Structure formats: structure tokens, C-alpha cells
Length: 177
Image (cartoon, rainbow, N blue to C red; front, side, top):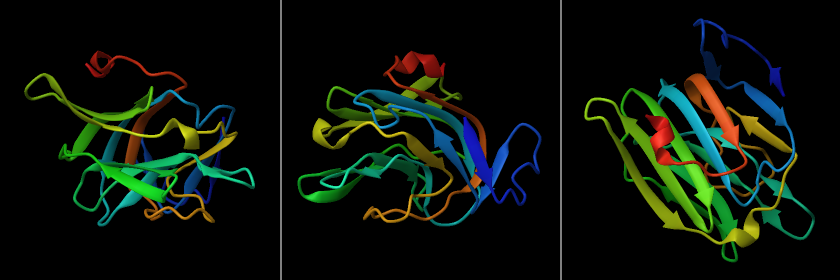
């Protein structure tokens, strides 16, 4: 379930949420679990970078969690923590104007996927990560980064999200097709 704050022009386009600084708070359990998949259809309309989803938490002894977004050069990013502090992974896949993408974490790896419908292929790249800093969280935020966490990227996302699926497991990249 989610709670939308400050709707503004969120519903200007039927079938899509249009983010311009507002956010949706997602309540649940296990949002920063060891294995997960975020699958979404998006069209970035603003300049600069923006956080699409953030599931950061602080248990008093350890920052944990992650954020997902799109950079100013139109590439997916994944930000989290390790023993050196916050880090940011940026996909090498250049996004089109409108995209069906996935960010997946499974067994110490983060993978970025983007459906290339013109060539009927899935473009991807992946990176090794430490599983230590992915503790379960009961809250996530769509549309902006959570405040109070020392992530590098915290800017609100400006653009459309017409589909968004979160799974507490990893799935096959062929699901994008």
C-alpha cells in the first residue's frame, strides 16, 4: 500500500503517475531484503538526476538499504552502503526516452536491465555488492530520496512512472519481454 503526499499534477496523464517533487510512501515488510526486483516503465522529463525509489533505514548502529534512480546522463543508478560508506553504481546502458527497466539484487550482485524493443533484446550490466548492508525495512519512498541518510543522490525524480512492480525475489530478465 502507499500514501501519496502533495499530489499536484500527479494524475495529469491517464494511466501514469507524473512526479514533480511529490512522493509516495510505501509501507510493507522486507523492502530492503537480500533478493529483490524493481520492474518499472518510466519516462524522465526533467533535467538532472532523480531518485525513483528509496528504501534506506538506520537501526541505530548501521545505515542500510538502497536507492534507485536515473542520472543526469539518462542511465540507471543504484546507491547503497558498504564498510567504506555510501557508494553509487551507474549502469553503462543508455536509456531511451521511454523505458521498461529492471534493477535486481540477488546473491551479492546488482543487475540493471533495459528492454530494447527495436532490436528485441535485453541490455544489461551487473556489479558485485556486499550483502551486509541490506537489512529489511518496513518503508520505502517512490519519487525522491529519504532525508537524513548520507546518500550521494537525493534529488526528486521528474517524469512519468506508468508501471511499477516490486518483488521480494529476483526474476529472470526474460520477464521484461
